[in-house]
Length: 78
Image 1 (cartoon, helix red, strand yellow):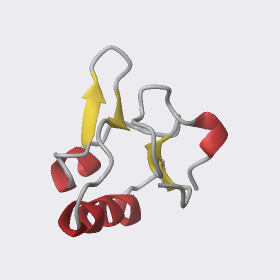
Image 2 (cartoon, one colour):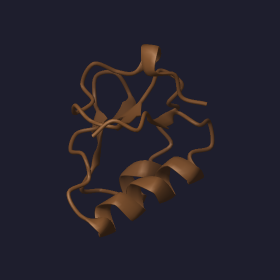
Image 3 (cartoon, one colour):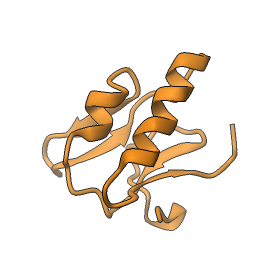
Image 4 (cartoon, one colour):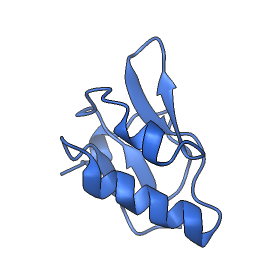
């Protein structure tokens, strides 16, 4: 389960985030490319834009549920 205290600082402010458990598998970037990007230097994904509509929200949830190491969190804040 993702830990809010371990989230990467380059995550966009909001309820979704990636934490230090990320193994750079690319699943989230392929599932929700409008919301996740790769930090090239660090070799991990982060939320660069919070979802702005129902479709993006659904894709972020799908990415979170599919993450093999549970590195994507959702803290309920908007």
